Amino acid sequence: METLKYTIIKTEEQYTNYCDALENLLVKDDSKYIDEIELLTLLIEKWDNEHNSFSDLNPIELLISLMQGNNLKATDLTQILGLSKGTVSKILNYHKGLSKDTIRKLSEHFKVSQEAFNRPYKLKNKVNRHYRNASLMNTEKDLGAMAV
Image (cartoon, rainbow, N blue to C red; front, side, top):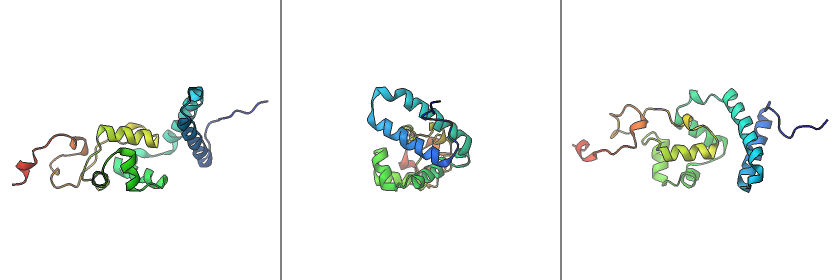
């Protein structure tokens, strides 16, 4: 009897191996791997849904956790997101919310659902303190009126 190339993920080691395999296939960017990519994505998402408690973390805590798990620093995020060091610092220190574009890029890079990053959380920025959550952070503001 022939053994299957991929099976339901049962261990953390198998999960890591499948994530590495998926990343390697995505880098190849060859249409002949589409079915394999879709299968690995499905298996990985199933494991994530059953074993990760992303809902317990706010989007910035999740981002920091994913950065630690992937040995990434804030400077690495500048390249991944196409943002300045200052903007990445403001995001990680709860001074600036995540834009839709940033959420999309994080989701793609870490292979996590956009919903994990697209949840409200409290900001610490004095200028924007009157906003209840980060979902309003990317709107135009009249900062001159607040500088009184």
